[in-house]
Image: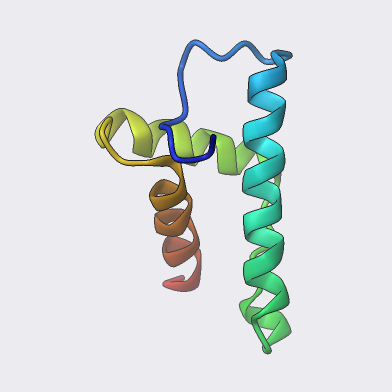
Length: 79
């Protein structure tokens, strides 16, 4: 369920981590698909996204994952 925060305990190869990262990837692809300007699309490796989210979630432990991903998207568009 992508409404839960990203857990530090998720093993690199755990099925749960793969599901979370697939959901995050789909969210970002959806944002990119709805962005008309190619230059405004998010082009970031999954490892960078995951590191950003882990940091964000450690600072905001009660924030749902969907909101954390939204914050990531906003941070990329603010660049």
